Amino acid sequence: MKRTPLLAFLFLLQLKDIAAGITVPQTPPSGAVTVDQSLLSVSIEFFTLPGYTQIQATSNCLENLAELRGAPPAIRIGGTTQDRATYNPNLASAVNYTVATPADAPASLTYGPSFFTLAGQLKGDVTVGLNRQLNNQAASLAAAVQAKKTMGNLFAFELGNEPEFYASNSAIIPKGQSWNQDTDAASQKSWFTTFSSSVGDMFQGAVYLSWSAGGLLSRIGTDGERFLKSISRHSYPQSACGGASTNLPNLMSHSGIVSYTKQYKSEAASTHAAGLRYFLGETNSATCGGGGISPTFGAALWIVDYSLQAALNGVDRLYFHQGTIGNCAYCFWGTSSVFAPYFGAAFVSEFFGTEPNTRLAMLDDGTSALATYALYSSSSNTLLRLLIVNSNYFSGSGARPVSTVAFTQSVVRNGNVTAKRMTAASATAVSGVTIGGAAAFTSTCARTGTPALESVRVDGNGAFSVSLLASEALIVFE
Ligand SMILES: *[C@@H]1O[C@H](CO)[C@@H](O)[C@H](O)[C@H]1NC(C)=O
Ligand SMILES: *[C@@H]1O[C@H](CO)[C@@H](O)[C@H](O)[C@H]1NC(C)=O
Image 1 (tube, rainbow, N blue to C red):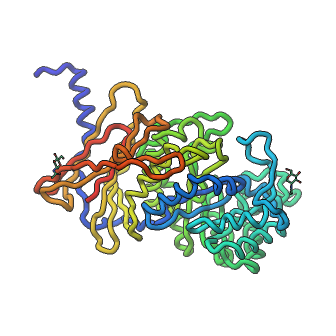
Image 2 (cartoon, rainbow, N blue to C red; image 1 turned 90 degrees about the vertical axis):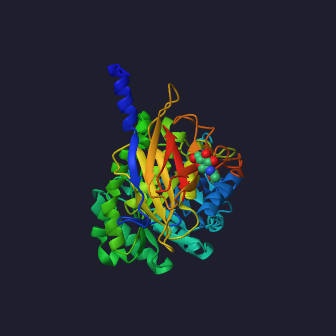
Image 3 (cartoon, rainbow, N blue to C red; image 1 turned 45 degrees about the vertical axis):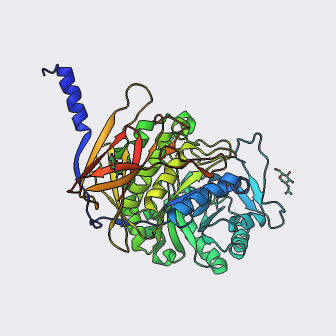
């Protein structure tokens, strides 16, 4: 057949999307990392905690993840409003504030002892963010003492949130002194020292967005590190602040995620060298509430690939931030809905499964749109599952391209393996996401629908291939 140049070009394009056979190592390859069972965790904006505890979806959505992982997600309570909150030991309600409309976050608030009663009822490790910006050390210390007394699930305290953005007239900044990472580190160390004599050494340091978290450790030294359990770095790949534009194809791009998450590798290593845990202690797709990209199925695919890449770079946990109820583009759930990003959280949790200490490896070179991962059992050292993400962006119009990924060396020979697909009508879809064709969540985050498993034929040499449409993900169960 004589091809026109255009057809030949299209044929080549199509070929390019068929990855050459990927050899699946039968035991964890070098570079495989051990995955924390609470890798996928949740951050709750400080003032919203009582509101979230009143929503049925909160306990159900967290419980689903706990069932899939065999351990509950960790919870961090904090954010901008932690540095606007003042503890009042005589306040009868959990929080008190006034806002012009329910969509607003309060400019100032007080909270009382029952705040910690609610926090104490959460499952999993809980980290509590306290106020440093207002320099009311007595109030924050009284809160820490109350939290320690009330919460059996307490993991650590943060003292201040993103201090690099403190306004120059913040009370914590001594008059006439400049505020920079040196002065902040000295302030953090001084507060840790004071608080530790009442509550012990249980702090989460740094809590920076733009300053290097490793920079805190070098500044406070080993006598400062002894107060800490963990280091927190905040991470948002994009910004919607001040009307800034966001970009979904960039967010979900596999090669983009690979290069973005590499920035955390060295500070994760220095944190681990200090004997501490390294967390992305507040993260989501875009700052300032999220912009148009955050509630989409593309963001669900981003959550899958981003969590895996973070783990490969030494991040022990990612705390996906949940903001103002009813005004939160990137949230997993709201008062009466479960949003598309939550499907990504559930899907990656299912890939990890309930076994502790599983080991994760990336099988591709990080330069294409196709992400491939393998997960291994630590007890038997054997291959458990594969995960493939086709991060090619499908806008919803035109033909939806398909990519085929060939694997050699399945555990199975001359038989079938099963697979489960996460899909939606397009990357921009904000509803209609399914796992296994049917599985979804009710408005209160109860699991609904029976997922269908696909059957994939494996030849006598253990070779097989799977096909994914642009903007889809697939788990292969070995
Ligand atoms: C609650 O806050 C409002 C201001 O937002 C204040 O007027 C009121 O006195 C506070 N209530 C209590 C019990 O502190
Ligand atoms: C194996 O998978 C193929 C499709 O990949 C399917 O046609 C066949 O029915 C499956 N066999 C079994 C026994 O499930």
